[in-house]
Each structure stands twice: as C-alpha cells, then as structure tokens.
Image (cartoon, rainbow, N blue to C red; front, side, top):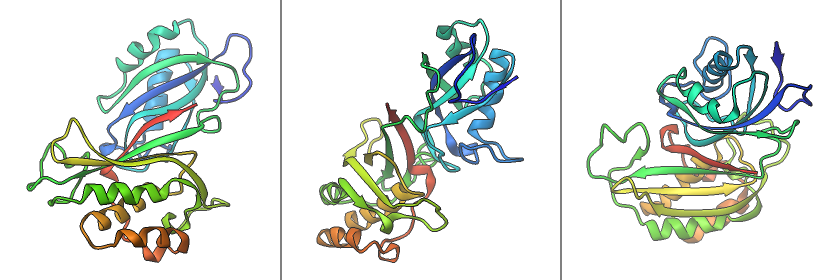
Length: 259
C-alpha cells in the first residue's frame, strides 16, 4: 500500500508531522534521485520498516547536497498500530547515524509540510579561526580571517521586508516570481563554536541558492571587499552579476520550519 502525504486520508490512516535532523555531508540532497543516496530515500525506507508498508514523505524544503538540517519537517500518511509517541525511538533504531527523528506528532488529514509552512529559518556558518579544523570543515565555511561582524549584521538588515530578490537567484530556477518576504536577518556569534559566526535568516520562502548567495555578499562586506552603503543598491538592481560567488553548501543549515 502507498499513501501520498497531504492527501485526504481514509479511516485508519494517520497523518504525521515529523521533525528530523541530518548531517548532509554524505547525502545528494533531500529529494529522491534515481541511483543516489538522499535523505528522502533513507527516511522513507526507515519509516517503511517501522509501519510495515511503503511510506512517502513530503519535505518542507529540498536541501541540496551537503546542506545540513536541525529541524527539517516532513508530512506523511501511514497505517499501523504503533503509538505516535513511540515512532521516534522505533525509527531512529533503524535509520543510519547521519539522520535522526527529533519529534513526531499527529496532525489533521490533508496537512502538507511544504504548502502549510509559514516560514523557514536557515543559518550559514563562517569559521574565522586562523587554522582549518578537521572537526568543523564539514559544517562551516572556513574563511581564515576575522570578519567585521557588525558591518555584516547591519548589511543583513537590508534583506528584511518584502522585496524582489532576483540578484540572489541562481540560474536554472523556474519559479514565477522572485519576490519574497524576509521576516528576520541577523549575523551573530555561534555559541557552541569558538571563532564562528552565523548569518541567520527567516523568510516565507527562498529562491534556489538564495541564502548561499546572500552569505557571499555578507562575506564581501565582512572582509572589506564591498562597501556597506552599496548593499541596498545591489538588492534593488535585481542583477545577479553584481553579487559574488555562491558559497559552498557545507556551511548551510535548515534550522526550523514554522507553521
């Protein structure tokens, strides 16, 4: 039996909202791809063992290869007598070490993790240590120098509000509009990582590679390659060529999804 997530379900079928975390280093992104190891594939296989039938999940965000998650959300519809409170432990006992469920709750039929999300929060982590750490290189972007955190934080405030973010849109995207609403954007220290800072941003939606391109602009501000007063003009230009490179994926984390 196969039940599609987000469908109106029949009696005896439960709709679940699952929050999970994963180390994206060994995954080719979240979404299923033929012949490749993805988070969706591994998660669906693990949940299939728990519930005893084919499980399909819908994710709140399609993170790319190498991107990590602390609070990715998925929805799924399933049958089975296992209590909802036992699903986390049961699933984590069969899932590989680089992905784990954080919480599971039963929600109304028809709930869809992507369509019902009100906002998502991402974090991009910079490591400003003088030497590269083998323990942090998979989870941050090593810049090997101090950055002007105050200037980066001030620059990030220009992202806030409803704007056209075409300047931060990677090629190949098929979305109809580049307008998004940024609810919050900050640059802050990372408490658990010495000499690391993070660009954290919450929005109602993101364009392809948008956060990694924004992080690249903030890096240019932080190392003095770009003037703070030029940031708003670049946003309003809608010109991708005026922004620097897209930063690598390992510094990016999906922190949470709000409903």
